[in-house]
Structures are given as structure tokens and as C-alpha cells.
Image 1 (tube, rainbow, N blue to C red):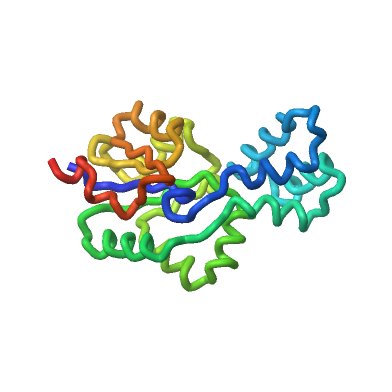
Image 2: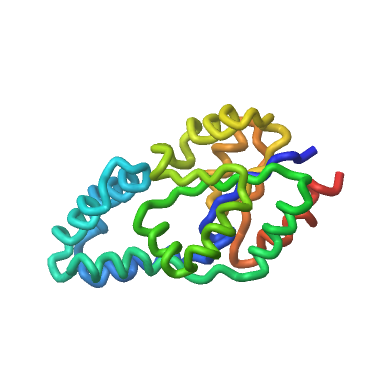
Length: 206
């Protein structure tokens, strides 16, 4: 029986354009060069809070000389799209039902969360955050998916049984890692599935 629900954020609740950043930065790259590996590494370090926002932005601006700090930040946040209201309605329904413990577990960074807070407004963001028992962001806890330690941390800190826990994420690498620990998973396809369909899945109809 499912008692605990752990949700990803991007492409589960908020819609994403995952290619937006890459496409925009490729415009500044010579067509003969690959996207720099050291910037991919910098992005992962920023995602776990190992780089400050200032140093992270400077890494990219130094590499793409035609970019200003503000131009890069605009590009960096272009991945973030809309938050459909029906998903918030569904989340509140889950919370009000008191049938499940709800958690959010997201690979994210300070710039993206700052944009969400500003774009959504403090009332909506706080309301969203308050639907969850714990709200785990990778840059705040210093861990990221798909590393096993982040799932073990959530299970152990909240005394969750893996077999009673369902993890919803749009990235197969992340769900496969969770599954290895005995966690049930839904590798959601944002192009044809919606988190609001969750309770119609077989895990809830056994």
C-alpha cells in the first residue's frame, strides 16, 4: 500500500523547456565546438550549492563573451514555463485527504527558485510549499538525484519504508536509481501524462 508520495518539481508541477538554455547558449558557441564540459560540471556543482550564484554566473559569462550577467540569467531561467492551476488543485486535494505523506525532492538551484518565487508571487509559492511535509531542494541539502544518498536521506530522515513510497519524476535515470532502493516509481512522461492522473494508476487500485 502506498503511504508516501515523493514528487519531483520540474515537468511534474511546473512545465519546463529543457532545451531552452542549451539552444540559447549554442547561439553564442562556434558551430565547430561542443558545449563545454566544464560548464556542465559547474551546473551540477551549482545545483548542490557548491558554487555561489555569483561564481556560477561568472563561469558562463567568462566563456560566452557576448553575454552580460543579466542576459545569462534570463537565458538560464528560460527553462521555466507555467504552473497549471489544476495541478495545484490536485495537490491540495491530496493534502486535504490526509491519506498520504507528501514530499518534494527536486534538483534545482538558487536562480531558478528565485525566479519561481518572483514569478509566482510569495502567496502562491508559500501555499505550494506548505502542501508538503518536507520540501527538499538539491542546492539546500547538498545532494542531487540520481545519487543514492539523496533517496536514502529522505527515507531515513522521515522514517519511510521504501516499499510504501512512490516517487514521481520525469527523468528515467532518477526513477531507476530510486527503484534500486526498493522505492516504487512513476517515470512520468510530461508530453502525454499529468500528475493529476496519479490516483488512477495501478499502484492505487490493488
